[in-house]
Image (cartoon, rainbow, N blue to C red; front, side, top):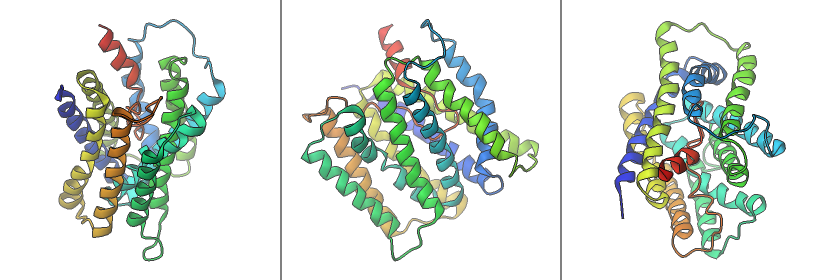
Length: 314
């Protein structure tokens, strides 16, 4: 068993966590629309660099226009929700709620992919949802728009991932990568006009750093999936809760309370069990959670799978 990919993945998610810290810094001053618009603008050259390597022939008209539209809207809402949640909530709480994504992927894979989910995975989903309730503590603490945004991020990200699993083999990589970028550029650019604040050079550089970190994390994640099986790489995403604790405490003065620790633990264990069931002895035909390789909540995100396959074919 090659565990090299686990070390690459740990590095990738450390980069992604740093990406989220910069967003939190900027989010204290600027609206998410403005941050996303400029980070999308800076991401275009980086993503085009990846697309230059796509030698498949074709055009940019989607084979499945409706699914592409739904996926584009979901990806755009996912990014907006993530940027807002990181701006207003403690890092650890955001990660704990976003970690519910595999649970939502499992549920959505039933109607979208025709996946058969057995008792074990359903039990893991239910336990994961219990973990979400432990983090939110409805009735004892106020559920803020930031909490709803983090949950929305998990939901929209899961939907976007399941749609890619459904049509990704038929749609060109360029279509699935460029459409969300263009949508972010146009929609966030329009919304930004109502919230725009002048950007000093230092803050503009910070937004550029968001784009570079998001892109770099994706590239390192490609190396991870090329080196090891998805069952080894995927669980490494939960290392972000460690970075959230470190960054949150030393940079933002955040502390993690017991319900967040307990709830995050339940959600993580549920996600790990779903990964285990999909990879060992389960009845999953589509393995939707294991196939969710891209980290969606970034303006510089791009599809990981095509570049992983291309590298393994060489």
